[in-house]
Length: 197
Image 1 (tube, rainbow, N blue to C red):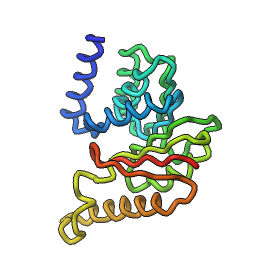
Image 2 (image 1 turned 60 degrees about the vertical axis):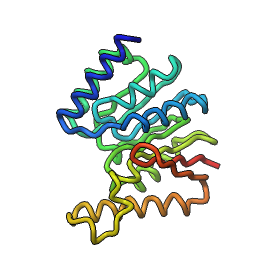
Image 3 (image 1 turned 135 degrees about the vertical axis):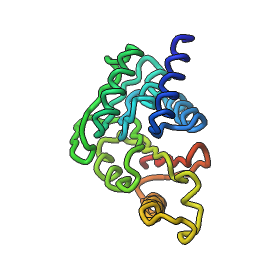
Image 4 (image 1 turned 45 degrees about the vertical axis):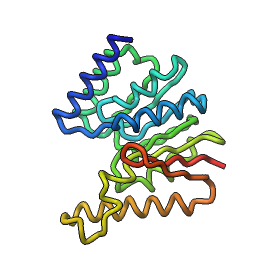
């Protein structure tokens, strides 16, 4: 395991240097604890980035299988390399594509949405049929670095304002979705857990 820690540190340092967003420590702790407590054995992740969260989820238990989708070629190739370094190729399946173009048949205990924030509702609706009964859809970055709590006029960039508006719409979508019990957690960058009724 000691070797794993130095490899994980390497991934985190690369993410920082290349300005690639990965889950903050208490966010990943929350996610991996949830997986352990709920005995999750299959995960679909929307947004691989460089494979950090997929690796962390797979390492919770040797029986966990993760399917993860990434549309950015450079990040996808880096994720492939990282997964190989951890010798997890038999348990982490990487798909290089825009998630909105991906159709999957299999079912998962957990769907983790950590991709383009503006598309969260589309991702949710597209993949919810892949969720097992009683399964959970977990979404990261709902605080979006504290911007979601700010008044719209406080956010200078028009693009950021639009993005924050879409995250707020997604939060409302989750609150109003009667097929799921959704809880919001003030951990990491803001996480929601939607359990299928």
